Image 1 (cartoon, one colour):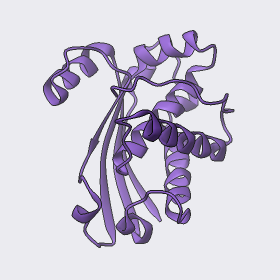
Image 2 (cartoon, helix red, strand yellow; image 1 turned 45 degrees about the vertical axis):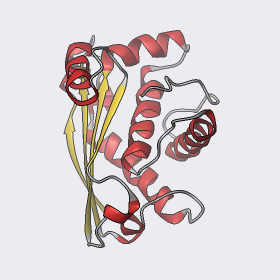
Image 3 (cartoon, one colour; image 1 turned 180 degrees about the vertical axis):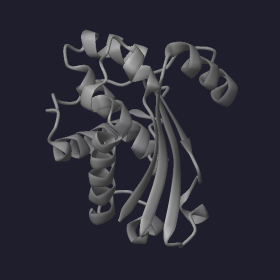
Image 4 (tube, one colour; image 1 turned 45 degrees about the horizontal axis):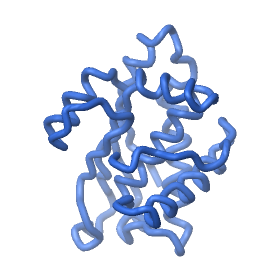
Length: 181
């Protein structure tokens, strides 16, 4: 599978020089490709059938600031508040996914400022927090949601499985996530 990643990490470079590998498109492309392959190969997990057979998958990943994510959250979700991650799925529902060689998943937007605060609160690295948020956003693009505690726990468990596959940042057990993401 080929991954076409539209990547914007400008907010990472503005954040006290915290970019390094986190600001490198190849770092994220590697993890995203691995996570998508994991979802495609696991027949027991929720994954659109067209994604399982696609030759090319494309998505966008943007790291931004609190002001921008607040604006996006207000426009698209009618919530005038900062959040950590937003996912804009290209297609909703399994029946709307075309059977094609190429699948456009949508976009993931993450506030680096919020991720920094959350990393400090949870006593882990910014890298771990960003990978946590990107994996959460990816699952939303694949149709996962968490309207109740049962579905939230299933989604968090799937995130942990994805993070364990990345190898670059150790997972530190399931932590709570804002159920209103």
